[in-house]
Amino acid sequence: MAATTLERTACSRYRRHRIKIGARTLLPFTVGICAYNEEWNIGKLLDNIIHEQNLPHDAEILVVCSGCQDNTARIVQQIKKRDSRVRLIEEPVRLGKARAVNRILSEARGKNIIFISADVTPKPNCLMALVRAMDDSAIGISCGKPSPIRRGSASIRRVVETLWGFHNWQLERLNHRGILMHASEVFCIRSGMVYAIPENTINDDAYLAVATKDRGFKIKFVPDSQVDVYGPQTFSDYMMQRRRIIAGHFQIRRTTGKFSAYILYAIIVRPRLTLRLFVEYLATTGQIKGVLVLTLVETIANCMAALDVLRRKSYVVWRICRTTKTSQEL
Image (cartoon, rainbow, N blue to C red; front, top):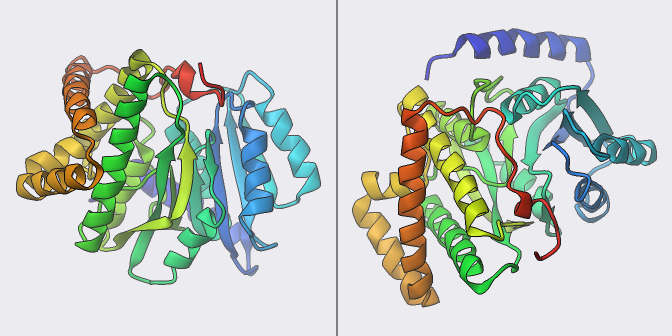
């Protein structure tokens, strides 16, 4: 993948940033968090990272608050006063997650950068398991294992749990075959692997995974790095979220010529392997009804995403799925 103008510009900015750091030793790693109106979870997330993840004293936690209209930045500022490892960058206007990701890529002082969503809860050892995986110099990205928190009606819960269940099943088996090309809700990337992503990127994690593989590095799935995610609690929110994510995969295919490892990609590129994984997953879990419903819902979501692409719908600043932004069961 040839470097884009954006990447070349960011590369120059990155070098200036490293020169500014001077002769100081780079920190072991940076935890990067992009946040928009996350007051409901950002305090709990930072407390978890500080007190339950066994971070070394010389790590840093970099939070980019983009156009937040609630108390997110204020909460981060309060925690920053108690722990000097926390850094806060406030952007007055929400310009899209890709811009916030680029800010972290250029400002991070760590040898590795852990990206974690602002609306999740990592299990103990989640972050350090990713860092340990990076000891292998052939690894460019290590990614964790997301699991949905059980909530919502039985029907939507079945779809969400089946989606994430097969997602993790697929990642683990692609990982064993050395053909994994995907990241997740929490992942660690080597600093300098990618200097910036295009500012219209929808799926930042998938873009970084494709770029990392294109540079000859491996991606490693780390099942010991577990994180709880708050899935959608209504079918309307599920469809809104999935069509955006799928449109993001189509975008990556159009801009890079490659697909990241998601379900439709797997069916198209490796139909035999995907069918075998489906059969193995069904035989192991017995989730026949869940898979059938998921297949129907995902087919509809893919069609809607394809229409979004044809209509050139922009997801640079996307609409928030309300039921994913609360810890309460609605």
